[in-house]
Length: 363
Image (tube, rainbow, N blue to C red; front, top):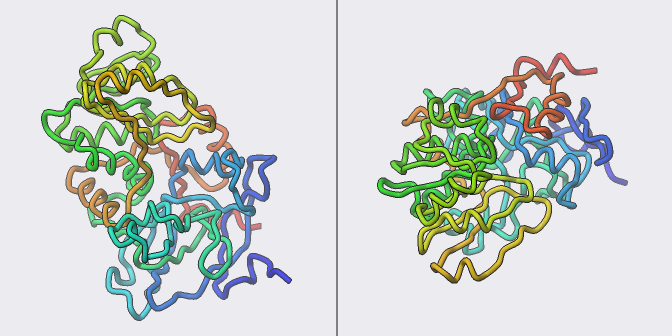
């Protein structure tokens, strides 16, 4: 007979979980985590970002959610225990865990520090771990993970505003680097100025590129140019502006997670230009081939990064003072925050103050 979540493992844990897809709301949840293994790092969770994919997972929009779900994969805190073989971190140091906590560690991707593309990747929550139990994320008081998936946080990186970089940050940093767009002399477009887009602007600028924000309305123009440091702002619904910008971009990072037309974006690319999709719409997008052929253009996807590159990204962000723009919330505000996120009513990332507010929600 299957054990209750709080009896599966020896370490008692507490968090908030969604029990099914119908309500879309979370409530207090007692569960347990495994004992600290030889290569494991355990840490007290202090902050956890709320990613748009948490919302999709809670509602089972992608069709593979496993309940109960304790979401959260932008998790930061302070190390409380390390296994006997751990060399990366010590008790008392600040660390984070992002989107994944496991992989096969033997395939070509894993051998190239690309665990994120391993066919057997184990996600931080809502997946089945090596021992057959469900993984639970960072909307909780304690976390344990193999040191292979632990990211060290530099002293000068604030934990609350740094937490979203573990998903949003690496999601935009990785394609900027891999596709050669984050360099001086390159013109990069960022589509959508949300949780991903706003850090995309910061990273692309810090890497030396000229950056244009592409948005459906003028409402974020001042924010993009004067606060986030973009060079230009393009309204995608303004046909004159779009026509004038045709063929001027080396690459575009499209962060939009709703269904939207991408043919106009392909038109903005120079020959050999690249449109990189990092948002995950629920339905397929329309992609005619002819606009690609006329200019040898590329449409590609990109998903987070391996642990090695995630560490590189955090270190780069600390050096260049890059953090997310956040709204810090208490645990009891979580469901309201999720409702607001569904309406894109956040600037630009909710982060839960786990360390100071979770315990007060225990029944």
